[in-house]
Image 1 (cartoon, rainbow, N blue to C red):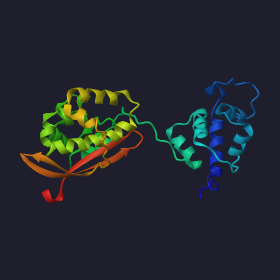
Image 2 (image 1 turned 90 degrees about the vertical axis):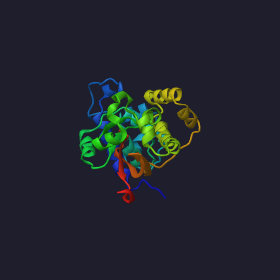
Image 3 (image 1 turned 180 degrees about the vertical axis):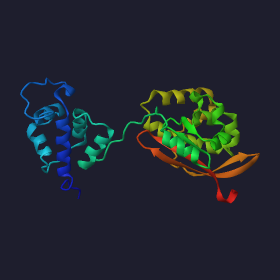
Image 4 (image 1 turned 120 degrees about the horizontal axis):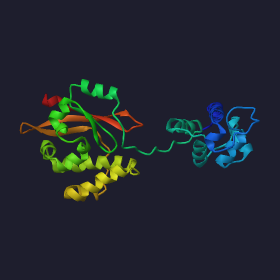
Length: 263
C-alpha cells in the first residue's frame, strides 16, 4: 500500500520553501507593509490554489491527507514551478507525474556535439521533429546530410524526398513505413507544436507513399535493430540504436555500426 509517511516531511519542507521564495507581486497581490515573514502567506497560497486554509496548512505541516492531480497542478501554477520542480512535487505526493509537452525547437549542446564527432561510427542527433541537428563525417558520407540546407535537414523529409536516402536504404518499401511509424510516437508527444504539423502537411502534399502510410496510423516502438544499407551496390547490415542524450529537450543520438557479421 502506498503511503506518504516517508515523504510527508520532505513535501512539507518543499512547499514551505517555495512559498517563502515568492513575493506577493509575483502572483499579482499587493505587497503590503506589515509582513512579518518572507514570501507568501499560507492563506494566500490556499486562496490562489482554490482550497481551504486549514487543508493547505495541514498539507504544509506534513499531516496525513490525500491530494489529487488537479490540486497539484493548481499548486504548481500558483508556486510557479518549472518542469523539474513540478515532477518533484508529484513524486513527493506519490502521484504519477504528467507527461511534459514535447518541444521541437532546441539547440545541440556543445558536449553532445563533441561526443558525436568522437565516435568512430556514423552518428547524428535528432530532436522530436526529427530535424538532424548535428552529424559526424561518417554519417555525412553515409546519408549525405551536408548537401541539404539546414532547414531541409530533416530525417523524415529526406526519407521520402531524397533519392540518395531512398537508394541507400535496402528494401525501402518495407523500412520506410516502419521508420514512419516510429516518428508517429514522437509526433504525438509534440502535437501541440505547429512546425511538426507543417512537416506532416507538406509531406502529405509531395509524397503519395507518405500520405498513404501516414493515414494507416501504425505505431512502431523499436528504435534499434539491424537495417541493411546499400554500400557500393551491395546491401550491408548495420546495427542501429537511438540513445537519449537530453530527455527534457527530447534529443536522441542515433548511431549506426556495421553488424559484426559484416565487418
